[in-house]
Amino acid sequence: MHQITFYLDFVSPYAWLAFDALPRSLEGLSYEVNYRPVLLGALLQQHGNPGPAGVPPKRDWTYRHASWLGHAQGCGLDMPARHPFNPLPLLRLALACSDDGHINRFVAGTVLRHVWLGGGDPLEPARLAALQEALQAQLRPDPEGSGARAKALLRSNTDEAIARGVFGVPSYAVGDRLFWGLDGLPMLRASLQGDAWFDGPAWDAAPRVPSGLPGAAP
Image (tube, rainbow, N blue to C red; front, side, top):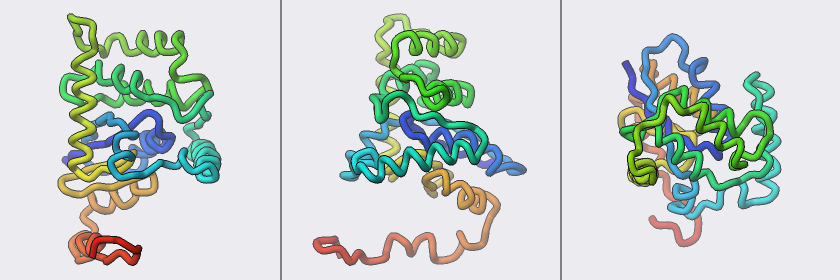
């Protein structure tokens, strides 16, 4: 059975789209998915990337594209009342349902639907309270009520993702291979199926292509 680590941040519309598409994309294969919340902002900062929301025309396109993909996939996608937003409360709530940094598919889906269906404000207090109630049976004991464990798990997850080379979400790690994005799912499937391309030189050769940008390292 293949072990897949699915890195996600609930602020990403493509995390929702990939979450919905993954079972269909990998239908017929034997696999287990570990959903691992990370802070996308920290990944972007690590690589000096402003993200699509930092480039106004790209922001407009991203929202149109994601909304259309939700329609095309049949899962729906409604832009929340404001975006981007601070995902920390959602990430920490999800990880309050975890002992080891991974969350199950029910928790991941519940939070993703909270954000991406209905067009509400993900951080509106009444909606957050309703989300916590929906996850009540999944929450781990927190005697101090401080949420310190969830905060530590998020830091650890994010640091581990950066060390592994994760630069955005959704990303999927299988062994030492990393795949990125909704459109990376077919490539992930091919790898799991043993496509001979992955035994050739192309995978390892890609990082060795010299950059032609001024000031780039040789």
